[in-house]
Image 1 (cartoon, rainbow, N blue to C red):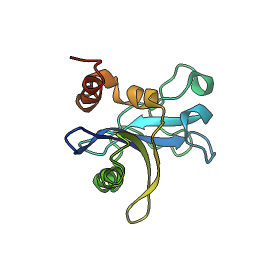
Image 2: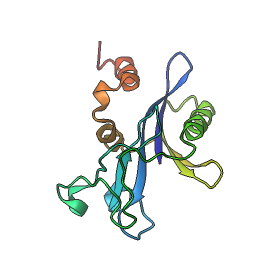
Image 3: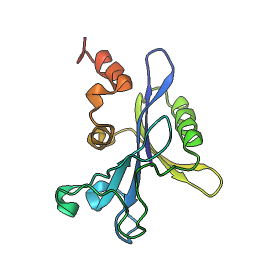
Image 4: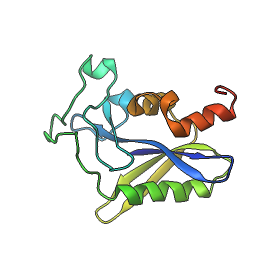
Length: 151
């Protein structure tokens, strides 16, 4: 899954958003540009939201509500170890104070989350879509204020 963090100017790290990444076939690639699907995660509960998002190229205008292979419904599916995954992303971000926005890829292992990688130059549009509009996101509003986009 992707967990976006922001290292704010006060020195604290905040989670901006999160989405679960999956493929919709029997492929090993989960990114949206290669036919994958992103399902927003509620930051408070760690549960998936109702709809997944895909590119037009791979799924037209439909918004899936279940995985077509496993038939698992997205809505209210609990991500195991979600709170631990958020804390792992925050801890990783603490080692890189010079990189203020990072999209962390975190896998869920059998007993805990596992950090896969951090992306400093990531596709913020996918996070924006999954959140429902980053301009309305209270954490991302701090980013926009720092760069002078919002008063």
